[in-house]
Length: 120
Ligand code: HEM
Image 1 (spheres, rainbow, N blue to C red):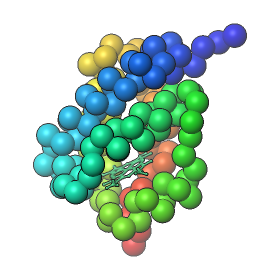
Image 2 (cartoon, rainbow, N blue to C red):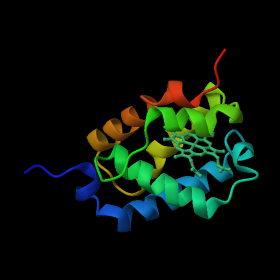
Image 3 (tube, rainbow, N blue to C red):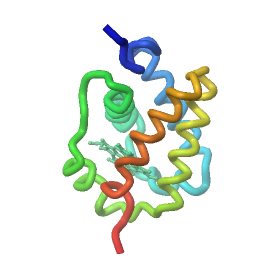
Image 4 (cartoon, rainbow, N blue to C red):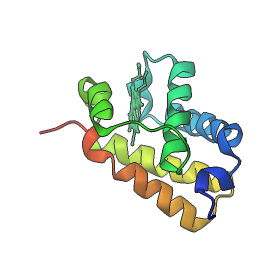
């Protein structure tokens, strides 16, 4: 059987390292960092690990309704969303993901945009 991206890159053990690195980038960017000023990073890293796992075809997933609910009060701009997408791609490159896999994971991320970015 064909392995998922999640399985091919080492499952949760490796994905949690990828997520930590991604979040360091997010906190280093002046475009995305302000949104996380009051966030418990450990808790968020835990959630994002599950999320990244799910967009790579691993276990665990978040429904679009849930994503809307947790982000609606945050007023996340399109610019911040796209910066996060760019930083995610950069992170996967750092971890030597193959180009096609990076494209697929970024696509899954961008597919959720309308549930994350502020409306109107
Ligand atoms: C596809 C993209 C994204 C997904 C799947 C996602 C997923 C999540 C999830 C699952 C949570 C809930 C954590 C919890 O229950 O405690 C969360 C919270 C949050 N997300 Fe996202 N997120 C995405 C994009 C973004 C972006 C682009 C930003 C900002 C630039 C952002 C900022 C936040 C913040 C500030 C929280 C709240 C943390 C807190 O509890 O204080 N998210 N996100």
